[in-house]
Amino acid sequence: MSEPAPVVEGPRVVPPALHGARLDRATAQLFELPVATARRLLALGRVRLDGKRGAKGDPVRSHQSIALEGGARWLTPAAAPRLTLVHTDEELVVVDKPAGMPCHPLVPGEGGTVVDALAALFPEIERASPEAPREAGLVHRLDTGTSGCLAVARTEGAWRALRAAVASDQADKRYLALVEGVLAAPRTISAPIAHDPSDARRMRCGPEGRPASSVVLPLAQGRDATLVELVLGGGRRHQLRVHLASIGHPIVGDELYGAPARAGVAWPLLHALSLLLPGRARVEAPPPSSLLDAARARGLAVEQQRH
Image (cartoon, rainbow, N blue to C red; front, side, top):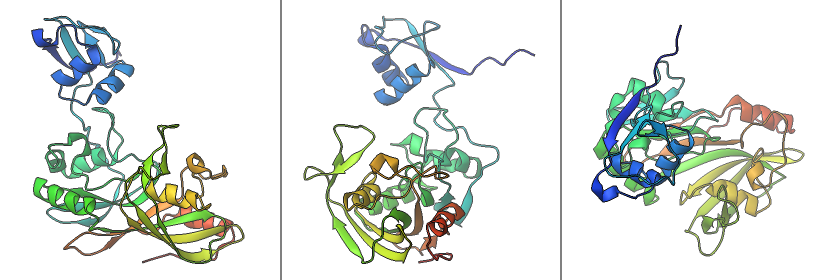
């Protein structure tokens, strides 16, 4: 049996105003995408210029056609979501995100993300964040490797209100992590977070960064690792990972920030334990067995941890 033809959106005709523009910028403008997204689509071979796959720097001419293989719709709702719901109401869904699952797609139609799976149950999330369609109502984000509480708005009003609350640090977000080394006393880390110019994947502590604070509360110590509860203030990218590494206690499995490689640990052992949004009850997601098992393997006497 022959393979089905790929879905192609377009073609869209290059207007005179874009004559001579690079293909990546013309694609971004015609399909209302960020330029970075258009470049990813080009790298994936999903952009066609007059029916042929093009390169990002190719110049376009008036009246040429540009089409997208796979279409420009961000989400591809999953038929069988594999997510645990910890809270639902008319405005909000909170899921227990598994480690290794991205929050949202980086290119249209990528699939396999939290919001793709949620859209199968709550299709209205696709309209909840009109300025950020790929995020489909996400109130905040978690790193791909981080598990736990993730909130997604079902209405535009809820998205705007809750996103603003998170941005102004009005949400109480608590995490659980297994860190390298023995940490005996609570610590408060106040250090701005900035991009690391030497590595686009990393962040770093630096005076040029944005303010951030993290409270570290030891729960149990083993021979060479500590289970800690973390209270987040600021919510910068990679904040907890950077702050813990800065005091010599990187999260177990976080090789990007200096933790040694550990057999059987695929992601940094960081879990979003609970979330309290303004005007709402606190919600919790129990720690995954992978984190607790790793703690026990390092000599920690731990049970199910709850805030």
